[in-house]
Length: 466
Picture 1 (cartoon, rainbow, N blue to C red):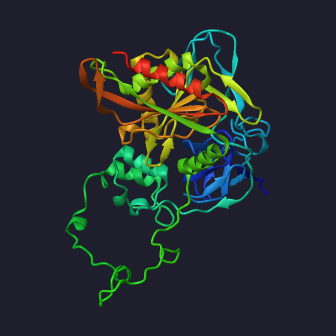
Picture 2 (picture 1 turned 90 degrees about the horizontal axis):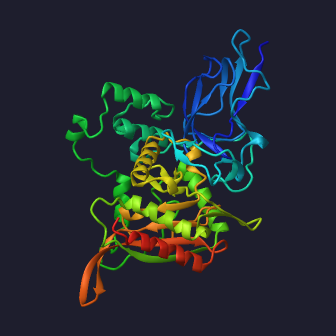
């Protein structure tokens, strides 16, 4: 009888506790070869294609598209085929799971202060000098130990927009300009898969921006009897004109359906809860006067430069803090986490070595990171390890904010929406454009004076013409 092997879900990130099945490349009964694509999994950071560790016949799949599998749980069972190539038991597959996973706070190699490091085109780093290694810890985004088990959480795929699809499929549809509402699903339970989107993009049957004629010409439907009855029950007065007694909303009357968080949003909930429990946040705010700016200044580029200048003058905010050991690590380099908002949740890719990039380099790097986030191709290594963060929420709305400091970082800068305000000058008044700035810092790791000097350094640099 042929031997059957179980493949456990490896740690696809840095101590991430689970991942969501996006799309299987095989089905039960298929024969798969060593290192061929097995399944696409969505983690809190990216969509990862997992290769097969065995060659043989697939006898069991542990879940369907949309199911959440815990790290270390059984993912697939394969009946080995001795006629096909197999990997030796002791051979490293490049993945880990169980007690040997890479957890938060594990050190990774990094360049020394004297080295020159630049970001590579694929999101990594290219070391161009020096031979003295230095530790550069990467705490990742998960706090605490990870528990592993064989439990599988079977969850419903998101039904936003009236279609069933996981976030990775929605991202692909946006990239290929495919209208998911017009794609014919092939997945179990009417779930739209990656292949469905790719097929629709290839044959042009669901191009975004157009509506089927049947839908455009369909008459407006009358409300369902239950909806009409509910609306009638909400009438504020009776036929006699007297107010009716109202009932507070309850689980029985709620019209929405609970939805399990997955992928990026699931991880965001964990990280925010951990940050709230660990950090002692304090916020300072002021307005940066940019009246003297010459044409052609890039706001994001200037904000990045101002942060670099401030980090050099006040290194205390460009640091990591370990609250358990009460140790602080000051960084000689400046890696800025740039918050990127998406429909699937918030990503924070790292702008590596911002302290050695010029204005053009910053703009090109930011554009690359945003594009990689949008098409979900960004390496997971680029979503952690930054030394300070920047949230440019002002591109949407708002003046000041108290953004969340995510450990081990100790500070985050937020830029609000620019505005014009009246400024008194000698002999009269003028109208200047200003950018609201907020600095949230962990008061366990740095003082109010250090934070104030950091903000002052940013204000002074932003006041320069160019």
